[in-house]
Amino acid sequence: MDPKEKLIIALDVDTKEKALSLVDTLKGDVKYFKIGLELFASCGPSIIRDISRTGCQIFLDLKLHDIPNTVSKAAINVTSPGIFMLNVHALGGYEMMKKAADSVRQEADRTKIAHPKIIAVTILTSMDEMTLKKAGISDTMDSEVLRLAGLAKEAGLDGVVASPLEVKLLRKTFGNTFLIVTPGVRPKWAASGDQKRIATPAEAIACGASYIVVGRPVTEAADRKEAVRKILEEMKT
Ligand code: C5P
Image (tube, rainbow, N blue to C red; front, side, top):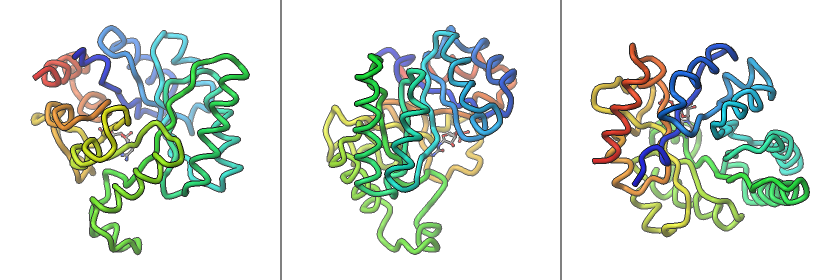
């Protein structure tokens, strides 16, 4: 296993300069970068092309959630520069997910670019059963995640975003070709922050994660390059 093929670094910064500097520092060791809401909201869609030009691939973490027509049109627009992966919220429902995935693939065929992976967020890794309950969902975390992942698969999505704690169950239920992308990854030497359902890089990979997403343990490290190298080493074990 080449750990570089499984590591996504979250560019959770608020300016183009900071994002490009981070990419520049890490691009020898990192192939995939995640653009999230913070960066997208401050720089606009042009940041997608700016990062693409460095030769790195982009996971656009916008967690789209709206009516099917709006989500599918937004999804077409944001994937048109040729990104690697986009996500939507599974709680948006079957029709929203299906229309988004179908429209993006049709548009990619029309413009002759590779199909971006479309994946669904099940339950945010910052939520636990208590926060779910407060939001009116009284099912257990596992059954809620399984149900939403099943819905995503049925809608033709490529996979899901899920916490490391659900990876094993998802892998067993949905097989080897279903992508499982896991944030909430914390090496032993890093602080957990607001993430509640966490695992180390090695644990997440061992459980069957296709990709792990790491943000603050790298972006807030005194030596970011060294932090990435330690994570890549850990993934190998
Ligand atoms: O800093 P940290 O490693 O917690 O960053 C995790 C990244 O993954 C953040 O950008 C966060 O928005 C994102 N994410 C998440 N949980 C999800 C989906 C994405 O934490 N379910």
